[in-house]
Length: 596
Image (cartoon, rainbow, N blue to C red; front, side):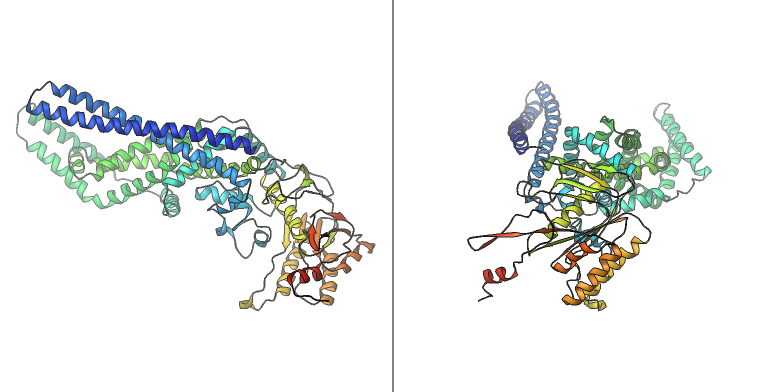
């Protein structure tokens, strides 16, 4: 989405917001005026002339009409404010302001997913933070699951690609969906995650079967009470039958009040949670899709409108139960609590098992619409072609880092087959960023999203990394040994001959140069397999000699620097062959630590 288009949308929304605020202010003043008219006419009718009651009723009815109209205006106003935020977020993704987004995905970081640390998949300034528009717990989990270093099947990728392509084309749906999620977030609270878990557990609990005699009594006693009322009021007979029926009904309801209250309070909490989802569910239900995956998701919520309507009926009974006066009267006349519990159990049996499906469906849509954001934020991106050949392929033309400002990001092309690729270059020349660029684009490929490239063809490969390696003092593990463990994991994984993309940055930097070179050569040779593409960055030019090993024929690439007016400069462009320059001394001189 072009920046000019986004700015035009924001300007249109600003104009609409100004108009709606004016209307809201006018309606507020009109409501105040109607209240004054009502009070004045009521006073005049009470003390002077009864005809003023007509004006009193007219002003009251007009007030009700304007209250409803004002409520619609305020909802429209809120929706447009949130819609503006959606476009503003897309604009932020075009620069660096997206790093202010609240959802960073830190909760999905753990010591076992080293790829997440190395490639900035989760955490501050991560791919997750860049993409995420999910606001429900299910949606955040689904997005985290999609950004996986393990390759899914071809069918999963193609199905997601088709769905994401349709959502890109259906811009109105994607923007409105993101807007509704922001509304959900605005109305939610910190207890929602806990409430959701409690809801799932509550809906899975088996309900006790109601004894037959209680079911009979709950119908029989109200009939006796109503007959007694009819006898007392219409036939002018004594009130004994009515009194007995009403008293027995109320006392029996009071006897079961603790159980009924516990169940009905849970229904109240469930409805509070589901109300936040209702607008989203209704919106998705009423939308039209063509792609297989989106149609499958929509089909999973086809009964939500009916289910939510019936849940509202149950809630109406709960609200009457919570009112002291209506509780006494309705339990005395009709044994309301017994019928409310029965109505709830019937709803739970019919729709309870579907609630989790509905909410997880919304979560999957949140994942898909999050992945759509890349295409809105980037001017150049493409869906990768899934390659299924006997030889692995990783081919990207004019690729760039997904998290860098697109206009400033340097584009490089790279094509690889199973082999070892040694990447040399001076400090800050771009080696590490290049490895992360390939890794992150592979993660996007796994998710079924577009990648930041002019064209792309990739085989399905699991991603293994050794980049941000740290020691562990508590367990007595040095940086060098921690890196050995990382590479050992790669070697163990390679034994099952599953396709792998291996990215190693500054291999074995935690030990002396002699040991580092010897260990690095051994590790690269072990990882040199027909089902592995290995990229290794290093300052050790000795590793470049692996291109002369007849069993490997490793391929060398490098990044280089140049100087202008005693200033070191980088072009960040990938070049063939080994690097022939260094810049450590120059950097020391620039920092004032080196003198001739």
